[in-house]
Every structure is written in C-alpha cells, then in structure tokens.
Length: 440
Image (tube, rainbow, N blue to C red; front, side, top):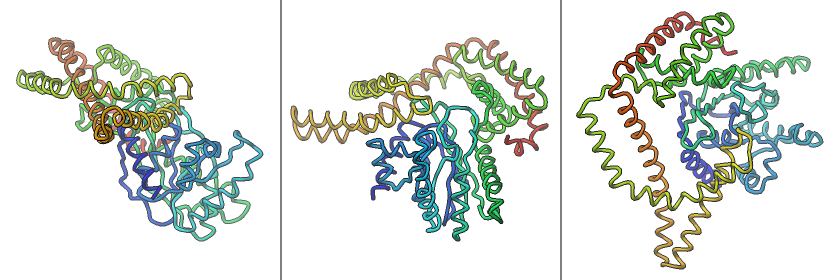
C-alpha cells in the first residue's frame, strides 16, 4: 500500500517538474533482475527508476540518506537497503556484508533490485568509473541458484536543474549474468571486472558521453539541421548519441576534420543563439491565413486564460520564490539542485495549500476550505500549461518579426545549414557501420 502510494505521489511530482520521456522497447524481465543506471542527478535518478519500473524494486542507497529525517523514513518505508561507503565512514564498511546478503536474498527470491554502480552522483558529461559491487551481488545470487538478468537504464537530462526541462529514460535490452560467472576463486576479480565492463558498455550505449559539455550545443545544432535534411523529428535520442560517438571517432582519427566541423557548427549556432532561434524556425513560410489563425488563437487564449493564470501566480508565486531562494542560499552541488528543489517542493507546497485551506475555513466557510483543496492542483496545472504555451507562442511571434521580412538572411542561414547537413550525411555514410561499436 505505502509503496504504491509513494510511487504515484513521486511520479506526479516528477512529471510536474520535468517533461519525462520513457523509451522502453524491451519489457522488464520476470524473475531475478538487477536494474542498473547512470547517476547524474542525485535522488532524482532513483526516483525516476522507482516511477518507470513496473515491478516492485528494492533500492540500494548510500547510508547517510537513511539518517535524514524525511528521506530516511521514505527509504525505510519502501524497503531500501543502505550501502556503506568508505568516503562516508570507513569504520562502517563491514555493514555492506549484510546489505549484500539482503540484496542477494531479494534476487534469489525472484525479486528485482536497483542500484547505480558509479557509486556517486556527479555532473561530468561522461559515465564515471563503475564499482564492482553490482557484479559481486549478482554473482552471489547466481551461485545461490538465481537466474539473474541485468537491465541497463540510461538517464539523459536536457537541463537537469531547470523546471519543465526534458529527461529521457532509455531502457536497454537485458542480459544474463551466468556467462560471466567465475569458474574458480582465483578468477573472481577478473570476472567481476568483466561483468562491470559489460554493464558500462550497455550504459554508454544508452547515454551521451562527451569530452566536454560544450560539445552538446554543437551536437544538438548539427543534429537539428541533419533532421531537416533527412526528415523526421529533431532531437532523436539515438541519433544524438550516434553524433556523440561520431565526435569521439573523429577526435581520435581525423582531428583536423573535427575542428573544421566544430568551427562551422559553432558559428551557425552562435548566430541562431543571437536571434534566439532554432534550426526548425528557418524553413517556416509565413502565409497570411496561418498568421491570422495564430493571432486569433492566442488572443482568445489571453482573453479567457490570462485571468486564471494571474490567479495561479498569486496563489503559487510566493512558495515558488521561497523554494528558489532556499536552494540558492544553500548552494547545493549541481547534481543535487533538482533533488533540493523537489524535496523542498514536497514540503512547501502541501503546507501552503493546507494553510490556505485552513485560512479559508476559518475566515470564510468550510465550503471555501474544500474549494481550495479541490481547486489547488487543477489551478497549478493550468498555470504551468498556460505559461508553457504562451512561451512557445512568444517565440513564434518573435521569429515572425525577426525573420518574416528578412528572406535573404533566412535563406543564407538555411543554405549554410543545408551544406552542413550534407557534410554530416557524408560522414554518417562513412562512419555509420562503426558507430555502434564506438562506445568508448
């Protein structure tokens, strides 16, 4: 009961904060399963796994979290297991034997466990070195008769600290642990590293691995123009990952070509950035009928929706500012900013709505208190939706005024983007057969 309630509550909060996309072409296997993921965003990462997994999961989490008042209670409530790390307290490392035994028992009983083998949350653009603890737990369970399968999950955040940014959850194909099982005690170390390397390979295939975050803007711009050339949606996660792997190959084998490509893409990206334009803004043809429909539709939205939006700002503006101020004042690490915002939101917003309901009941009527409780969530959702849609409309209107009368400038940018896309298409043909193997 508690597990299901928390799962629904956390899922609601995550989907309010992020635009969550889940790509799960492979169903989670039945029986013993170990779900492993990369770890770029604090407690948000396990929260996403908690929400998207259709099976009950046993989570492994660092032990200091269990000593935090609210989070500790939640972790214990869902049956999470503590992991004792040397950097936290070397004297407690012996406690891991009990944790490993409990995780092994869960697998032997046909259950599913989840852990993040990097061992820490971080903000580097590459997958960190993996610990061998996942492999050792898996081996222990297989030796006890469990047919354990590993499921890799890749988490990619567009802007992980920003409200309503996108997060992509990619579930990879599972694989068996048994083929990696050591044949003797002497081979245990090598076998654990072999399985850990296989997990790392699977995670790299599902995530972006960049030498520097600066590469990401160039990759996204290049991919967008390539998408315009070949058709299909921009921002396709698999294509973006292939672009990232292509950069790695070019950096190793053709650095001069990579540098020229980087200069061309960066120049185009900067000019678009000055306009605050996207590649897909350039081919747009502004026809009078479409422009008229756009104006009428947005005038109607402002006429009927703006008063409700203002009410939403008045009701929720103060708690939003409070959460932002507290997070800013406490200076959390970048990989913990979203965790701090979500954690504070879990406390501040229910208290705020509850306080407003009590005030309505005391100073107006019990019916007013009920009205506040019933209307709070729909009002908050509408306020968020209205702000998002008007931001998109404002962008489209700005592009009309900036680019609508500058056909020559638009054509020149589009021609440069087309030439870039043609060059990328040639590179895709050249490197394509090797990209699936270029994961390191």
